[in-house]
Length: 170
Image 1 (cartoon, rainbow, N blue to C red):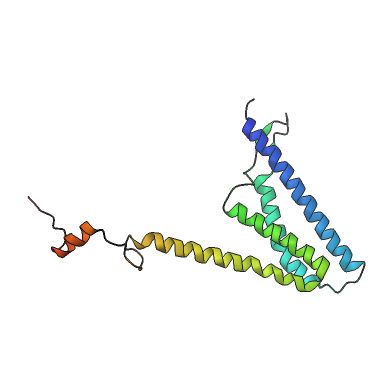
Image 2: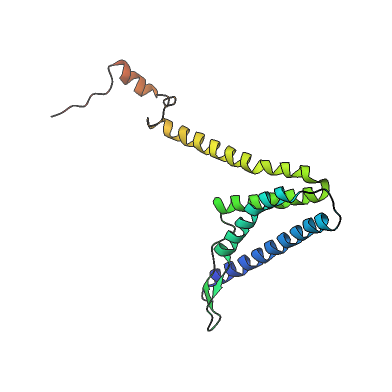
């Protein structure tokens, strides 16, 4: 039972990556079939421009999470990073899922559905703004960033009335 957690992570990563590649292959095949076979009015410029980031993310997740095995005996060398991790990995999955949704919408509704992809940069901007404002609020009491000072307790208010705290030197 050595490395049970690593082996389970490796099998979970392999299943996730295989499913991801299959879904991506099916979506791209359907889109390209609709474009070339049925001559539906679709432009390939937004297709390439808006799916290349998702393909780059998928390639990065492949490199990050694919388990590696020793060539001699087939034992697990590295389980890969956890693809279910929070933070940047979670954001990359969101971009990938949203791109899939946009591709499906374009297949059904036409090229106008590529405008749905604008939600990705808007979401990124919203994340940055809320993170920075949260940091400003947390640093406001430290005096490092301008903002309202923390409210003073009654004891602090009384000390301020008497002239503030004084340090006695001996």
